[in-house]
Amino acid sequence: MQSWFIRYKNKLPQVGLAIIFGFVLLVENIVFMFFATQQIQPSDISQFLYSISIPSVLALWVHYDSRSSGVSLGMDQAMLMFFTWPITFPIYAFKSRGFRQGGLLLLLFLGITIFAFISALVITFALNFGITIFSLEQ
Image 1 (cartoon, one colour):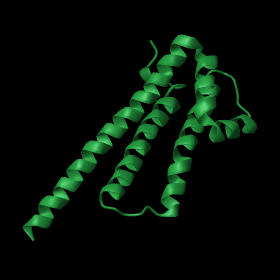
Image 2 (tube, rainbow, N blue to C red; image 1 turned 90 degrees about the horizontal axis):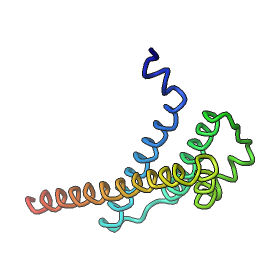
Image 3 (cartoon, rainbow, N blue to C red; image 1 turned 180 degrees about the vertical axis):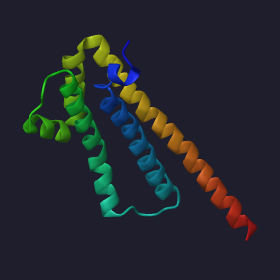
Image 4 (cartoon, rainbow, N blue to C red; image 1 turned 135 degrees about the vertical axis):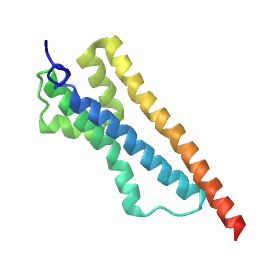
């Protein structure tokens, strides 16, 4: 009988990168929502990091997913995925997994995005409520 690790060894990078994707979205949304509610202008470097983080995680996810299926993507295809991910990620999902599983994969990433946004909204509301309570006590 195979152990859990051996059975799912090829899928661990994809699961880990999906968790990292959700965490990155959560942190970015919290930071930018908090900046917006406190009327703080985000720095240029934070906006740059925000713009490259999601494509980087998705390009890494596609890289590890293609390696686990035995198809290697070249550097040019990885860069194309990085720069045009809103178009090429759904195409990759449907071509590599078929219509049904590709659609479920896209729904999974959409669910991670929505969950991160709602969680960031709640956390930002709690932070602002705490700041308001502590500023009233002084």
